Structures are given as C-alpha cells and as structure tokens.
Length: 184
Image (cartoon, rainbow, N blue to C red; front, top):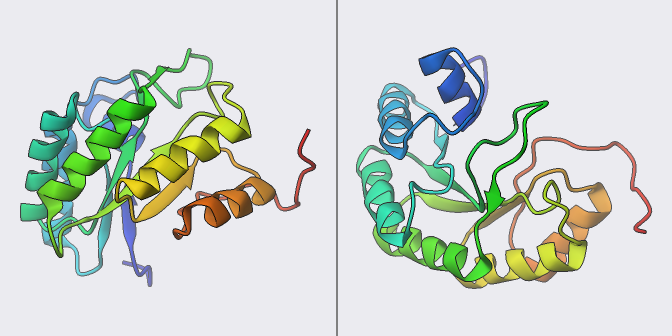
C-alpha cells in the first residue's frame, strides 16, 4: 500500500478501469459496489468508495449502502450531482434537489447503522454555478441529516473554512489552491 493509511476509489477510476473511458455515468451503482467490495476485502487499510448519486432514489441508496457495509467498505462518498460529471470538455450532470439528497443521506445512515461505513457527502454546487451561500445551506443540511464528512468540490481554502464552521464536521479534500482567495 506504499505507506498510505487509506485508499480511495472514485467513479472516474472505476469507469476508466471497467470501460476505458471517463465518468460519463456509465458505471452503475452495482458496478461501483462490486469493485469497491472486492477492493475492501483485499486491503488491509480502510477504503473510501464513490457511490456517485447512490444509484437513484433513497431506497436505491439504502440498498447500495447495505452492500457497501456488508462488504467492509469504510467510507462511502455520496454526491449531489447526477449524470455525466468531471469529464473535461463535456457538460456536467444535474444537481440533485436539496430535499432529495438529504433523504438519500438519511437512507445511507439508516442502512449503515452503528459502526457502518462513514457517510461522506459531496457537494458539486460550485461547478454548477451555485453561490457559496447555497453551498453552505446544502452542506449544513447534509451534516444535519447525518453526513459525517463533507466535501465541497472546487472550494477555495477560505470556502473550506466556512464549510467547516457551518457544518462542524471534518472535511475531505482532493487539494485546492495554495492561497486564500478573496470572496467576491
């Protein structure tokens, strides 16, 4: 494991590995779960697994989370963006309405139960042109619904600080700018 204490498998890596193309929304929730469970069972370190939008409605999320939990996945990332995403030069998917994503997080928490996978709520609102106030409303609702980790894709350091203050939750990050940018 090259000294890493945790490993992450994302939807884009899954799509690339299974289909030889980016994250066009081709990988189903069943395929995401299957690969993550195989990895989790082969690893000696915790695995963070991407669940995209959870496979549909809150019942789909519940079923998927049960499978992630049974397979030993340590943390599941649940996105509020559905459809093709994160593919340069291609249009992004659509934001899941706030109330529906909150229900998905609650379903994931119910399915995981005590000691189940940590729920990591990802917000992609910045890429879809939502204001920081809209993002803060979203992530506060996600935290209140039970999400244990928060990730705001594309957030600046200053925005990340605001997210942490509003949610009271630890943040997941894939990097970002080295300097604090001024809010406009």
